[in-house]
Image (cartoon, rainbow, N blue to C red; front, side):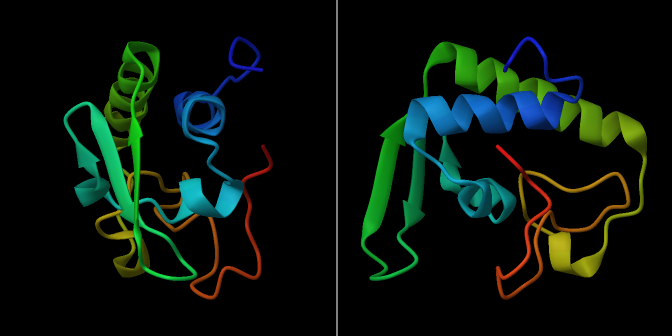
Length: 106
């Protein structure tokens, strides 16, 4: 799946799915502030308890590549996607704010 991903963001999301058991909604709503060096720290949606995962070197590289591709695209960032790791090629979130629809299909 990683090799078949033609988008660096999708490749990074697959890494997060394997490395951290992240779902499509987890990836689509992942804040940049959650990446803490080699760790990913995010409060769980249901109870707000911290969810921490050590990021493999491969996952860190994939996240770095995804960020490079986003920054190189020069797409105007929409307000709803501000502060998120991933965004669509239109500068939007990969999901709606309620999480009822998600364009990420991992």
